[in-house]
Image (cartoon, rainbow, N blue to C red; front, side, top):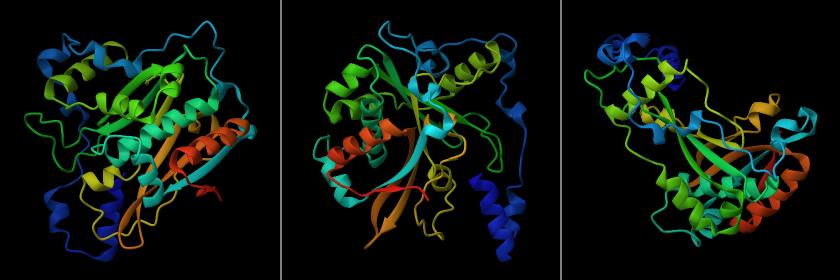
Length: 290
């Protein structure tokens, strides 16, 4: 999406199109197929493809409340986490934690508390990573490749473990699932998808965090744009949107980094989430969606 918008923007400005001609759009999904293994798939990283497997349901748990709540009873809000809020959260976690790890862990933990899941129910946070440039396949994909190369990475814990332990534990869970997207891992994932009929990743008891600015940064197209921040939540699609939180970075003041994140929850859970994230970040900067 960022690649397409960048190209349209460049053409609209009347920029020299020599770069565009050197990297023409490519839509060749067959580039992802590896002939020797395509005929006989081999799944070599079974434990690292958990996003496509369902979670067991605790005997004390009913259906996930975010699936059973009617759409009109869902609430979408946006939360601005500036330098003050980041500093408050960082006081509880290792100094080496990245902004994305910190925000993801805090959202996952506060959301789980707010939804009141049974203590023994296993819950997940799923982060979508792009393998466009980190997958060192041979030959490499052309820069104009328009295909989707998203890799779901999952951290998992019981609700009791996640909510009953400090924020630093949630950060370590998120960090522990970040791994190098190797050639062998990607081949294993593609083989798994081929063998299982291209299943969609499982969303029960799962919270998905998507870095909305990640593609733009990976393509190197952000330099000339000023990000004003803002949410990308499709408010009208509350059932699916309640599983997702979109994360966007923006600059404030003297170039200090901040984050704007969206959240969609049943109304009572949203009230609890506001209390949790406020306590976690020591701020009252939550802002309602327009």
